[in-house]
Amino acid sequence: QVQLVESGGGLVQAGGSLRLSCAASGSIFSINAMGWYRQAPGKQRELVATITSTSITNYADSVKGRFTISRAKNTVYLQMNSLKPEDTAVYYCTADRLGYGYWGQGTQVTVSS
Image (tube, rainbow, N blue to C red; front, side, top):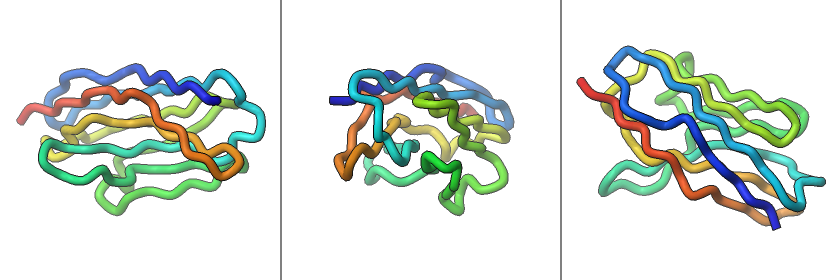
C-alpha cells in the first residue's frame, strides 16, 4: 500500500502562484511515475503533469510553460505560476507502483479573477 498526502492548495488571485506538495509513504519502493490530475466542478478528472523515476516529464497543453513538476525521492511537487481562474479545481496526487495506481485525497486550488 502507498499513502499519498497532498498539501499547498488554497485561494490565490489570477496571475499568482502556488506550490503543491505530495509525500508518499508506506510501500514506496518501486514507485515509478508520480503526478498530478485535477477535477473542476462538473468536469472529468484530467491529467496535469507526470514525472517518472528517471525525471521524464509530461504536461497537459493547458499548463505548459506555467506549471513545473519536480520530484525528490518520493515527494512530488507542482509549481504553478501565472494561475488562471480556469485552473480552479481539486488537484489529486497520483503514484504508480508495479502497475497499480494510488491516489491522494485531493487539495483545493481556487483562482479568483
